Length: 341
Ligand SMILES: [Zn+2]
Image (cartoon, rainbow, N blue to C red):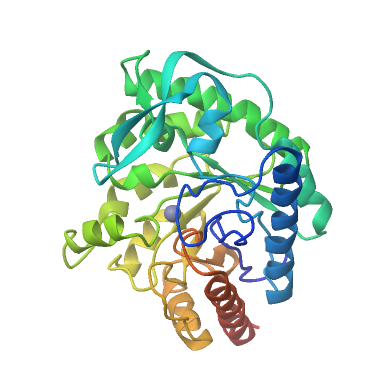
């Protein structure tokens, strides 16, 4: 990207109320069949228009064509029975109703490639596409076939890689893998998590990114965060591993979090997407607050390696609020960009 301090959203945006119930995760679609297909792509166009109007540099689809960032991908795979749903505990934190792996998993056809082509057709700006990471995928389903988290993660990594290569061919500039599970299972991250992530990104010529966060602004996550103490140092385990990895860009949570800013320095050499918008708060940040977060980050990352972003997806927020936060992000980045110029 040629712009200094480019802006981007982590991924999801709220859906229009005619498409799915607002302010809830996993909300069922309100349309079906051809109407649903058209509705999802209309919503995608609206999400892109909002970002372009605000002035976002690296544009994403707002995840308007998926019910959920992990389960929608899984439900498109063979070997997964999405009628057979089981309740599992996600990231040791909350229970969710998820699909079940009942046989060898495989990708029968591209999952998001047609949607990515729609996104590509809506703007000349660089575009980003998000995929779940292998570890977060295995943490968001019930496995009744493999009996090994690691084995299943490697299977998913190969499937993600096939999808990612087709997304790149469709014109996607940045492919981002979402791995919130990296903040919870440090031993697995070290043993095989980063390697599986690299396998998912293998051979890609576009920019690769990983997003690691403390989750959506939902009650279960807020309660969990309250137990993490004065300083959140989970990134301290993960960042040195990512710094040595083949992944180009790391997205982290920062504004209003208790993540010490100096942990950003552990990523030296990587591009860093710093969260300057709190997705768990209903208060719209001022551009000055965004600028302050970015200035602080600049003490630990070179200006040409900093991307201004949100802490996580904004799917559970009201649409007007998500729009206002997007505008604050862009305006805040502009302040710091002018200071640097
Ligand atoms: Zn997140």
